[in-house]
Image (cartoon, rainbow, N blue to C red; front, side):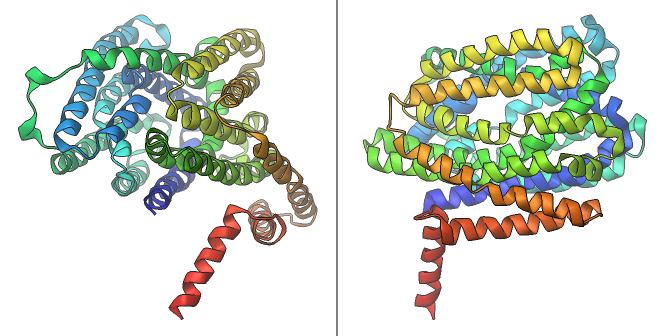
Length: 483
């Protein structure tokens, strides 16, 4: 029951991550244009890269450690304080390096004011504390808190970004909202932790450093191909190319975020089941997650590839035509990264196989660097899109290879091919309505409605023993009993 609630709130949060950018991003793209959208995404990627480095593996390690001591308030307070201090020290060190880069690197010095606000945004991220609240299964708080922040952000976008030259206001707003977020987190921490029991002389920072070092190496190598792509494009090409590429990737990552929310919500439960020795329940939960993610991801990939021109023209306008092909190339990432989330950051991390994750990430880092320098200078945003696609596919393949040593994957192949065959009617729906519906928005809506109808028919009436059918039958039984 607790897992279902966590999934619900995490999916609610992820849906808000999709819906709210769909409101603000088209407005920002049309108001600021490709070049300023590009420089904003360059600055944001640069700041988030530093956030990722300063985290020192805490987004994974922190959740795991907090989940272990969640029932002991005194130990919980001590562990949370130790992890936070390590994160804060890493942030302080990297903020100095960030500041030096602003004055030394020409690409940053040209937009000094923007990157100074990006530095402030980076420093404040230490107070986000997502790792703590996830480890505590506080997904309701995370969801509601984030909904409030995003509503404020939407209002601020339309109030403070009115023309091309208002792009610096974007980070000013981010900093303001980060302060509000820190205040909300502080209030919640006061309720959950016992600060009266905390003695700084008893803190043991050193014991966390060794396990965090391995995770940090993993996160660092992942960051090279997952976060550094936009930064490399900014250095090897230009801001306009960054604008096209980042716009395409951002649209796909919206859907990736929704699907990843399912894995994130299940992770604390999986860690608990594994450490209790309940392997059958562990394997069953993983299989259910795999089925849900694959059955949702595959139709999304097909829809985005086939409807990319309509999506770009409706959301961003014809000025972003060069984003169409990168959007199509990166669409399979929705499926690939979802599967990586299951096999890598769900199974391998839950069972403590951090070294296998590191090896997979190193493979991705090597491929990413080589392809980036080969393809980006000549093919710009298209080269960057091909690079991230090939890299993520290689990493996912490595995750699957290592996972096979932990659990049997025989049933997973059958599920994959069942869902693959189920895609054929989606293709028919898209091509039929592309022929007969002339208006872009109406065409997308009709395709979406009929695709959803086919999804329901496929999952509830055609495929045998699906998790969707099981949930539907459970709901029907409950309603029948209430009558």
